[in-house]
Image (cartoon, rainbow, N blue to C red):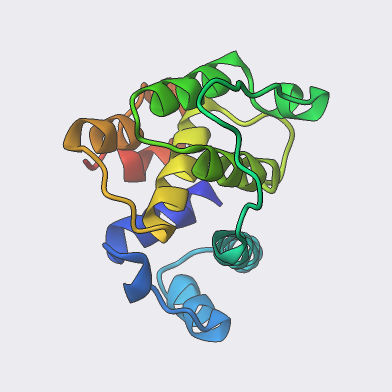
Length: 161
C-alpha cells in the first residue's frame, strides 16, 4: 500500500488535485497497474486520513508536556519511528495535533511493525493532506532513505527523487 501512497504524492502534487471520489480514484489506480486489494486498502486508508484531518483535537498538550506511547504504539512504531517523530517535533515541523494524526494513521496501516521508510511515507501523506509547508531538507528526508528500509517494490518510487 505504501507504493500507492507514494504514487499519489508524486502524481498529484497537492492533495486537492487527487480525486476525492473513491470510485474515480479506484479506476485511476487500477489503470496505473496497482492490484485491486491494495487499491481498496489505500483508498480506505486515505478516507481515514481525510476524516482524521477534519476532526478537531479538543485539548492539545502544552509545550512542556511530553508524549508517552502505549504498548501497542511501541510495538508497531519502533524506536527509529518514534525518534524520527520527535526529531520533526523539535525541528518545528510538527505540532501535537499533526503528531497524533501521524500516529493514528500509522496504527491504521495493515501489518505489525512499521518500518522507518513506511513511517516517513505516512508522515509525508499527513503533511500532504494538511497542505503543510515543508522545508526542502525535510521533504528530502521524507522522500529518501536507505534502500534496505523498503521492499523492492516500495523503493522504486522513493528512489526516483
